[in-house]
Length: 138
Image 1 (cartoon, one colour):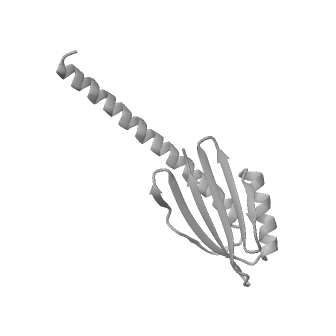
Image 2: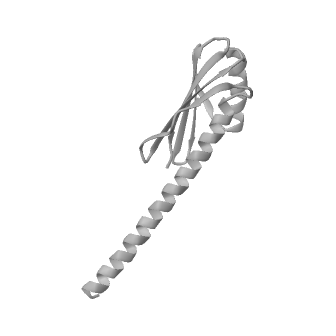
Image 3: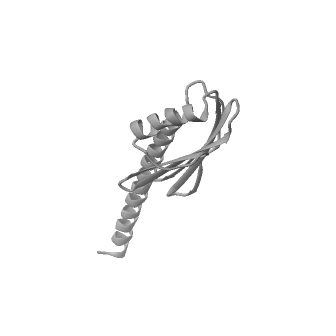
């Protein structure tokens, strides 16, 4: 192979690899965005108010974090029962830890790991909740 043909072949291979990486990043980003939307829906009860969403943080390409807060007129026990019917049943999260102030769920799939921490910030009324999400997609 001549040097110019070798350079052309290397250029084509490089372009292919860059396109493949870009497609993979877009697919990962789309899947993570859908997962975040679903988790918000499973953790923010109907009639919640003062919903605050922090911008997503992506410290690296393999980790994403987001926090949201809201107020609800549910008690902690009623909210806990509601969310326990949402995340484990609909989103296939498993309860990993529970204290008087927090619920922690996680979900692991091939190549992906998601963690959700729900923290009672104030009893209210209204009850103040903060949700922390960490996703490590493939």
